[in-house]
Image 1: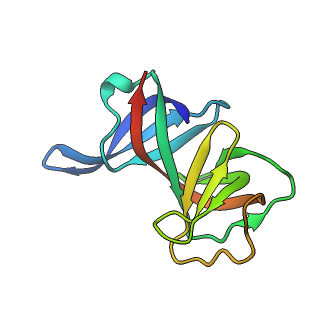
Image 2: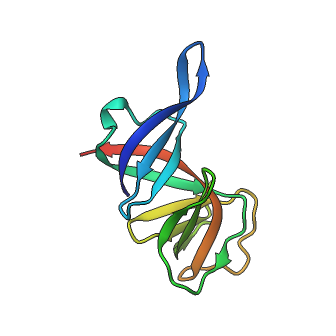
Image 3: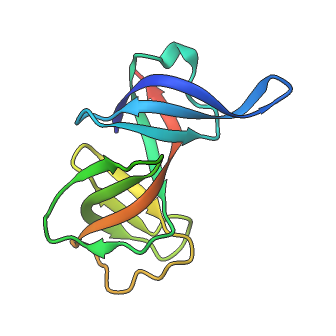
Length: 140
């Protein structure tokens, strides 16, 4: 998904060196979100640039069926977001259980040990309290 990197804030710092960081980014729909960048993918040169980013989500909340057929990432009052979209794929192994179409791209969502229940491909869902993680940046 394309994002604009607005700011980079060090998260974990030891003896003046940052080991993880948080990226403040604007999504294509204009929403601003925080994305954890544990791999230190974003650099100061990326600030104010539009980049192609692979972002995944992690939540420990059970997704619910959303009949509103809405596709978006919605910031909450804290660093988390709510993800609304249509399930493209359900994975039975690995760290991510769902691939969700959010309109401006797709996002993999991991749910820890949560059982998906009746959620299946084609369902419109809401995943609450998602922490966004930056996996990769492709620069234009």
